[in-house]
Image (cartoon, rainbow, N blue to C red; front, side, top):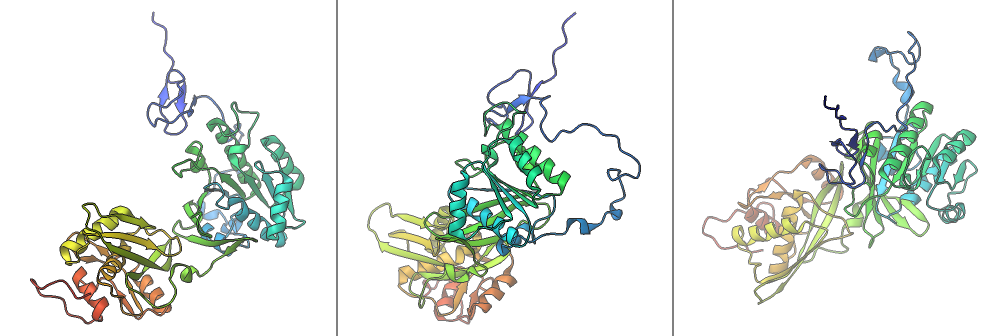
Length: 456
């Protein structure tokens, strides 16, 4: 009689792929080091306890639960509260990721200092820096307070011991990839270690109603390092991003069980720490009057409308391959806009080197910036500036038509608040109409079929 074959004793922690024997690389998602024993336990697993009828752990109708138990607590940093949905929820597990050196530790030290100033005890467990290094940064940023406790530990059990001793109202662990647990094999940063450490911290947060903020590393492509289960277990996933060449930083919520995921917090890195930027409108605009090759668009960062100036420069080039250099915009969309300009509006750009950039280091990824890019490039070719107080919002089609964009009313309200008297958007049916409106006023008539290019 044939022996009974085992039933998939190994599985991938990323995608759930199973195998009869251990392999170093998953056969489904092609990730390395994610295949573990299917019976391997993590800190999220607990022993089975009997449920007493009427007890605190007994199942009850959803209408009997009190929402006051999840009252939010402000962090003291308004822009961070905006991203979290209003503040910290007791028992919430928050994952903050970002590029190395972007300012994650500085932001969290600022959050810890404001929480301590409000009378809440904070434990900052740094596994990457010594206590002296963190103290020096705290002195520079003014984050010293007696209610802010600091520990430099890489062992999970020791960190839990500090939690029992300090009994904090907020726990910050920096970072999960540098903390290891004796209950799991592998070095710190291994997928099994990351999964074990994160699951124990999340269980601690739920059992003690303790908000926990965990710092996570990112890979070369910008995704969060470690097993994908890390993002599934936590309640909130925030990403801290910014350009190394500028001091502006953004915090975005990629996942939020307690609020919206379309909010963005703006910060400014300074020599004394990190400052909030509640109204960043002026950061993305050039100075002085409008010049040839510029146009302002109203972009959306989450639910926040921001004016962004698009600048273009064109240089006559007789060579066969003109250059296309962009910064802050999508190269593919710029190439499409240039083709539409030449074919549908009669603006010849195939014999020009074209340079397109945004002001302030902001990156425009939405199609609503198409019209502003087209107006800026056309103005650079014809050496004409748009009418003063003009902004442009709209998506261009290959037929040269302007499509309406999302949140048009919010964009228009922001433009009016900042003093823009004219907003070129979906009222113009074609790109030709928009170019005439920018050059000659909103009431300019559209050219008849067969007419030449608009005088812009």
